[in-house]
Image 1 (cartoon, helix red, strand yellow):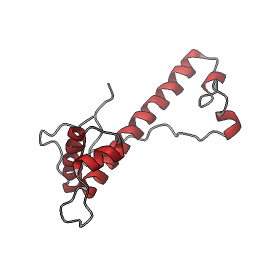
Image 2 (spheres, rainbow, N blue to C red):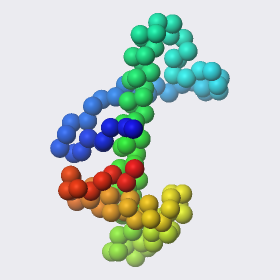
Image 3 (cartoon, rainbow, N blue to C red):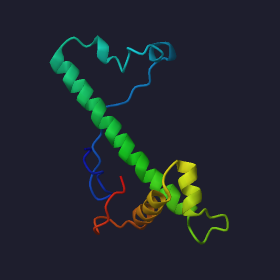
Image 4 (cartoon, rainbow, N blue to C red):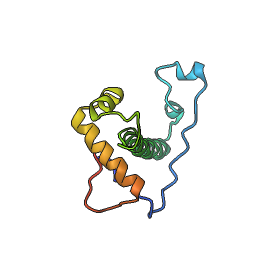
Length: 121
């Protein structure tokens, strides 16, 4: 399982850069960030580990942005606010998960960290 996302008071680690691949190379199903060209198993493990950490960090950060967006969309002060069901449908979540993400997003926006609230993912 991925490590918890660092919070605002903890410095974020800089993951390995995710380099975009040219379209013709990316179209090759055997090609993945040039890992197939690395012959040395130590170097392959190191680079694959860097990529794994980068993808985890990117996914964790994206979840935080999803939660904040869900909280903003559900804000009762908005005239066009969405219900939890509407947010769930848009994000392809269950309604219960949408409720948890809205609360998580509200906590993030208030800057509440570590008050026992568990990351919904």
